[in-house]
Image (cartoon, rainbow, N blue to C red; front, side, top):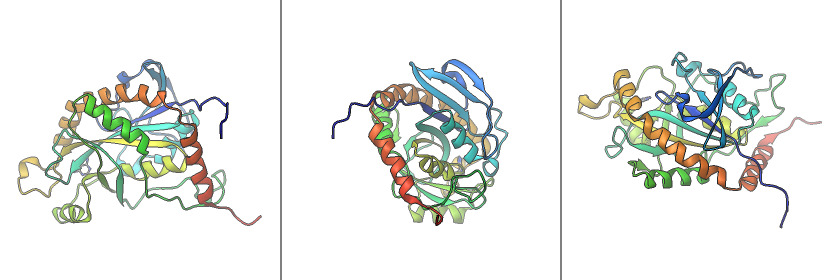
Length: 284
Ligand code: ADE
């Protein structure tokens, strides 16, 4: 059916992981400190634009990397970005590689996750006063937005940045890294990369009706490999991620204008419909 209503305006939320929490990506920047019904986000929101497209940046661990994974208020982060008007979330995350052919420095455009977290609030529908009403059982067969993923993959190709078009992220609780037995088990399960933050962020974005995609940057080979020279350590993670943060910035600078060019009205409507149909309302 033809409609003559204007396309939905898009605003892009950017969540930067270790090494990409730097606001330089945005022009015309200003800080905004906000609160949410779920508490405070990890840091101030940085409002600005990328080539004229309105964006909001948030450092997932805080700008000084002071918030450890278990203590990240994922609900407040996603809620704050949604309340600021963001329709899309594009994020970066440092990760370990569980595959020989995913080299440190490679980008992985995630398409699936395995949840090994244990201590995180993973839904907005928590039954508390002030939270949305009902119980939400959201389908999670397609956690990451296929439309943004396509744009990110094309941009990586155009920029000739080594990347993998799909990948399953295993998110562990941390803060410790995995034992070798765990690392080998995650490989057997079909995990391609491993981190501490994709879950519950991706699921909360979906509950919020947003389009979410993640560029995961491999920084190490976790610890499954016999060659200990490539094993994970804080030093290795920070060195590789900082050294490669410019790749993430180049990808986002090219992808964001392309995201903004599309008409997202139908996709956003479909996202909203999925959430509405997934909530069991209390009897009236
Ligand atoms: N972040 C970066 N490398 C990681 C690893 N090997 N395990 C968990 N999180 C990570």
